[in-house]
Image (cartoon, rainbow, N blue to C red):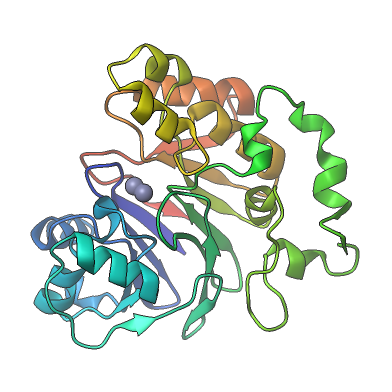
Length: 302
Ligand SMILES: [Zn+2]
Ligand SMILES: [Zn+2]
């Protein structure tokens, strides 16, 4: 499996993932031309993409879904609620047939399974994604917002919370069904683990992770954003700070071979601060990469 971030940030998101001959784009926040050009840098024809999956209705994720669909005839996967909200708020243009999925469902492309995992972010029906090809699992976890366990970063010692992670949680005994429960899905293929630490549970199953590391707490609090916007970003439906992202990886990313950090704020963050914060918590030996707001990332493989 390989992943390339074509761009990541509030100015537009689009992530390329390929495995077993299946090529997907996660989100459609770049123009059609930019999407085609950035893929072409890696010898990839945009018309060879098998599907575009939309995470949520915010403009930086959905804006060019219509263009990709009409111009390059790419099939779109989206939830009905996300489509309705996005179509009412942004100029998406006309679509032919859309492929509707329900938040929490798995979408199957030949040998690839894409798990769609509900997020706490302030979209109408947001999800993040895990791509599983049977050999490895890649998480693309952007625009997450906070679960209760993340909101307690700084008050709680994460290294003491292993009991909660690996013991009994939410009234469900994990012993014997760890893999199934950790992936978050029940037998019917529906996302089932709506417990406060479900991001941690998902990440604990992953081999590679693209995750948001949106803001530096200090820069946000002294920056020029209004108090209302600051509290939206810090709130349940907002974004993860560098510290929250690093702590999530620290507590749950034992299997991870690498992490790529994205959706980095232009106003309230820098690449150096992102990397310093993560290195401080994760150590110098853990492989970190950056998904830029302006260009493609390196090719990350599993
Ligand atoms: Zn976003
Ligand atoms: Zn968003």
